Length: 184
Image (cartoon, rainbow, N blue to C red):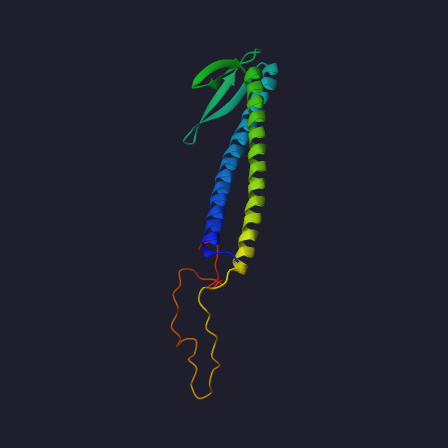
């Protein structure tokens, strides 16, 4: 038999794991957006490298707030891009080097994404196991007060209709009634 305080402790542990899982999913979403950004950057740099062979490269660059600049590079030599080298330091690099750096960064970020996804999967399994343990323990919990047995209805007392019955207010609805849930 499990005590109520033990069940509450288990529920708090499960809730903490769920919060950690939500945080992991949020970080995974952010990293996915960064990977997508790197894909776009990589394809633009690759396109610029290929178009320089014609002696003219052009692009439209969004600078935010719905404003786009037209960019033209008229030379058969490769252009340059400002690249964040880290710690707020930027360096001017040829498109090919900027492209290689972008791909290298994307690989590192993809590795991080994979690690976080694996952590999330393991945490989901752990939460499932803990929830099952909680449910099993809750099933063995004995009620502290005896539950009243329902009295059979007598024929001489009229039964109130559904509209006549007062609604019972509870802090949560649903099919659980007085059963112990993870919220307790």
